[in-house]
Length: 120
Image (cartoon, rainbow, N blue to C red; front, side, top):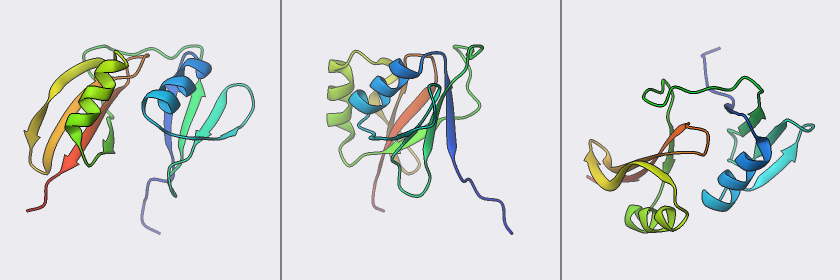
């Protein structure tokens, strides 16, 4: 069997704050609570798990994993995220090989990107 990603886990120090951000800011739907410290978000066949960890700490300058989200209109996403006062790293759509992207942090310092793929 080939290796494949089966779940994306995001460790956070506050589960309720994480659910609020990922639901109300990014638009994910809460799927299931697995007790008081673990929640699953609806994300097709590859679930996103939010897990509260008391020792969740982050380096503010570096991330080894970045969650990339797709969007059809990156300029509307920038406008919406600015209204939500998201902490941007790159707040102007920037050209990258597959199209354009922006980069920002969740309330705990995890880095996320929105990508708008351009048809070649």
